[in-house]
Amino acid sequence: MSDSNIAFGFTAFAALISATMWIDYFRRIDVFEREKIFPLTLALLIGCFTPSICLFFYSLIHKMGFAENGEFVNDLLYAVFAVGLNEEFSKIIGVIIVLTIFRKKIDEPIDILIYAGITAIGFAMIENFKYFSLYGIKIITPRTFYSALEHIINTTLIVYGFYRHRLFNKGNHLVNIIVASSIAVASHGLFDFFLMEGALGNLTVFLSIIIYLIGINFWVQMLNNANNYSKFFDYHKIHYTNTIFKRLVFWYALTVIITFVNNLIVSNTRIAINYFCFGLLSDGFLFWVVMLRVSRFKIYKLKYFNVKIQFPFYVTKNDDEDFRIPYLNFPIKVRGENYHEHIPTKYIDKPILVCPVNPKNSYLKTPVDAIISNKYLLFDDVVVYTVQLNDKDNKTYTYLLKPKTRGKTEINDLFPIEALYKVNAESIDLSKVDITSLKPLEWVYLKFN
Image (tube, rainbow, N blue to C red; front, top):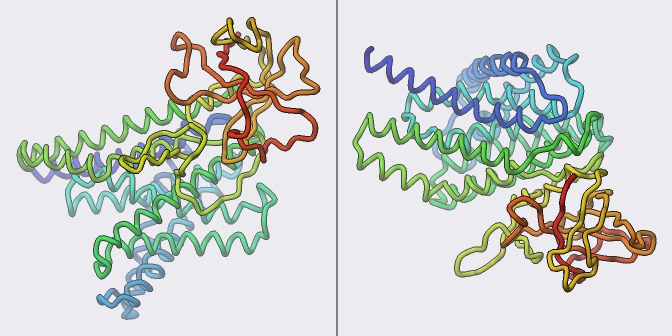
């Protein structure tokens, strides 16, 4: 086999991996009524043809004399309109075709966003193949996590704007379309512009990352709302967070390994190791945060969360941080429910046993039969569960369980530890309750029947 054939095979494999990762992700978040592989594959193939539409419009644009010339304003306009508008319009043509073909298979909101995302993946896969051919497979990790995801985010945003009023009865239909499309085109154009523009130095890369991070949070919020409004909604089917995060880590590791092996083949061991270390140091932490965020959702039946301009993380005051910033010691939490916060979700409306961690100094004294009745978000996105305790006054008081997320979180690596709270039940709005204003009764652990 010739070197060119080997290179072509590696390039095609890398492009396929960059697409397969996100298809696998969509399959795993579609938990209520999962789409079949065949229609998803066909949607991907249709997406693969959309770059040809884009190239046609590029040729027209260049014939009109509109091209990059190194001037700040000109190149900014080129990035937004020639790149952003052109590429998003081309992908949307593919999405319209896909949604028309599979309109009878679409039976929940998440399906619309999944088909839109996979069509965008088809576009990104062809684009990645071109970039891998030009620059080598060493860029597979950033192309998979940056570029492919940017395509998915912006296309999903446009489609979300088209369907926001119809699915969620939110906003004005025309305004939704205009706002969502404008944001998507501007986001796409500015992301590319800041990567290409050198006038601002290293600041341009920083600005691209800001757009990228805000876009990711936008995207997850849209997916979150779509699943919350599924007509097949069932708390007991949901297995988010840990499973998805581990799967994403697997795909990330695979892209890193492919890069390392490729560098060993085309260069030498020292260069391969240096590039491996550089990739981990430059992008590893950022991608870890991204993988955490896209694996975390706020699962509440028929609850709509406003899509806000936010980073996918925030400074928390609730002793539930994922990490602390070195030296500054700021506690940072990645948005969405983490694994420990999510566990009781599967047992809503099911009998459980609430057991005191320290029976000798306990409010409950002994294990109590109970039922987790509902799930709420307190002020500052703190996840709690209301629980009906047998032999306790559930009319005067509302009992809350707040999952323990730091330190020892389980008894015998099996039973989740929770803080038990008691609040007056009279006309209390839990969404306005600050957890720091409450004093826990004790630590308990849950046994599920």
